Length: 275
Image 1 (cartoon, one colour):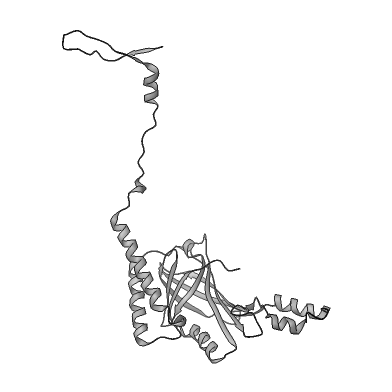
Image 2 (cartoon, rainbow, N blue to C red):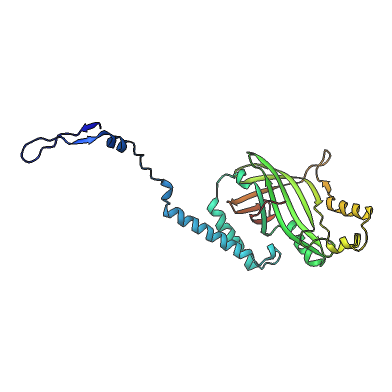
């Protein structure tokens, strides 16, 4: 075995003595990996407190709008409380540039004060057979730096004719461009009606289960399932309608927006991708 002599040790009697140490032991010690301490294990108490405060304010905002039927039924006191809670959340993200990769995806409407959206909810109250289901905004802008596509999706139905709440889809598509850190400009392009799902009662009327399904009845069912009507809102001889939209707050699960010019506010939460 190879030996390595360590520095001389002098006992009290004055004699010197060298202690042999195996080189293999030295090698083993020298090959020990360095100890690494992860800095991610240390979280600033200030960051924890800020995160907790943010989640509390977001929860307060959602709680303030939960009994308003997405903005259809509100009192002046409720609107004042909602605006106060909205501004409180917006203040925590003021000035940050908009991240289009994070904006990309589907957002569900929880509340709005926009008249052009509230009129849909009012129609469902005045017309008993009309049902307005979920309303979404779908942004398609992943990997982009200056804009993308936005699709306003309204799920609706007619009682006894279409499937409940999601019997058909109204789709309003627009291009949007990023004007500044938070302002986007929308240019509407098309309104479409699609994804018609007829009720079991209507299917039975068209093609009764007790009778052989004829070619014509099957063609009618297939036509309704694949039906899509679209109306362009822009063209070479007419200017596309547009609007300015200010995205005042965004994180991984909440999106707040304001339609510039008094068009109302919008509160969205992240939703699963639409199929």
